[in-house]
Image 1 (tube, rainbow, N blue to C red):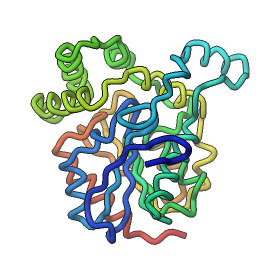
Image 2: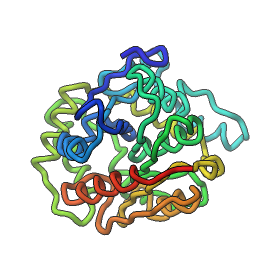
Image 3: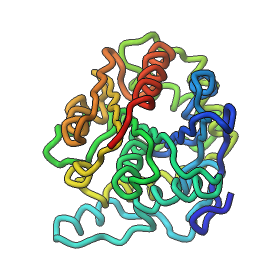
Length: 291
């Protein structure tokens, strides 16, 4: 689909006359991050589910000519009080999502984002408020610099170089997935299937670096989200090592009337055990009336 002057790959699940629900994936995640199981469950609960590849990942447009951004220089520019140059911003990615709704002729939708996708969802809600029926923000953050940092031991392991060879990549990512599974039984077979499908569909690590740069530049969006008035549910895991529980609380206390759902034992992934609670929360929130 041609959207915002680029190509965005998307899939839909469910009846087009049902309530439209746009799912926005996190850093480096393809639309596969929203599992068939979760999407079909949401469709059965009355949603017309739309999942898509963010720009620079999966089968959407790649920004190869932009090169690999220097994250250290981006941080240094911020320290100097400058706005660093990056290939694109989270605002651009938010506009991609709205462009997809335009292309599908959907005037308003329920918006749900996870991790980086949760930041994009928040930006949509204050940048395009008339397009949002309800907002769900999962395992995300405001980028508030006063929040506690991610656990360094997890960051070091998760963002270390990854082998490019297929089998080695899959095995390494299975190990890393186990680090963010939380207190639930780890389903290695499920992780293997997901990482295999992901690699075979589109192995493209360069896009992750540019998405990471986009995440770095908005800085703190907390002041902006105070203007959001749409019904909002913030879902966060008690054991999230990337965006600690304080990050979820920060979002929920900043958006007027937002509800906070803490899932005990959940970290930074979607074990099967949490899916029913998440889907139920999305349904309940979608039925609330906004201002």
